[in-house]
Length: 351
Ligand SMILES: [Zn+2]
Ligand SMILES: [Zn+2]
Image 1 (cartoon, rainbow, N blue to C red):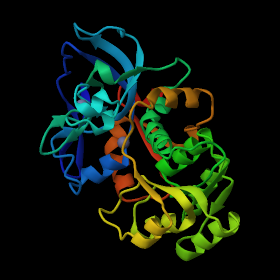
Image 2 (spheres, protein in one colour; image 1 turned 180 degrees about the horizontal axis):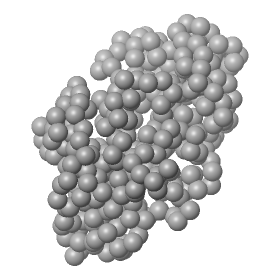
Image 3 (cartoon, protein in one colour; image 1 turned 90 degrees about the vertical axis):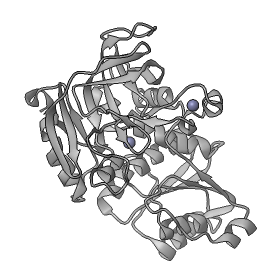
């Protein structure tokens, strides 16, 4: 089969690899679409240490079942499916509680680190265990389905924020996850959503996707404007989708007393915590990681149109153009959102 192999750091090549065989509880998926994740781009040059070559990356995928293992039930050849990016064990204490994203034996599809190596979906075929599969409605296109992983991440962040309905929310960062979090917060009952970023193009998208206010501000100016919009109370919840000192600080300054700051972004490993502001104003700081069972809800919200992903897909390209797209993403070319590769399609079919 054809696969996009990271043969050494910053070197992707279209390679011919043996087609994998599914084990008893696994299926072989013919990959129709697989999104390039920010974590793939970060892994590509070795900085994250999570894509040690040689590795086929790719964990945001959808396709058709081509073969089922002997112990698989409920799925058959030809089923259109997507799968969780997390391969959880299903048996540890966390998995039993449904917190599969926190599984003690968690692996991620398309990741190779010191502990394990698991081939991903930038290939014509990928093998995954049945327990992480979800069936797709016929009306959901494969490139849209490749966005389900990111949508689930946004839904998980909003679920942990425990909205009751009618809240005001501030989303900081209008990248992929921020724009999906905006829509997830709206679907989750927030009555007013403010989105802040320093990039005008991204804010334009935020407006199209239902933001009530978009603020091209940062720091103290941003806090002041959020206060003005909320009669000096602050928002009920701030969803921080960047992860830098300044943005976390703005999130903390922008919530009301007793409010929640949900921390999604983690672009830097450490930030300064304004402890007294958090303690004396009784704020809740809530971390959120990946997703834990939100795929079905994500499928329903996309089918109903409450969550739109189409405007976030910059390009759908054949696998042969994957290396070039990685270079462009790595170079931080402006205005690139999600790039989806289509491994089992011909270049003509993709266009
Ligand atoms: Zn991802
Ligand atoms: Zn587990």
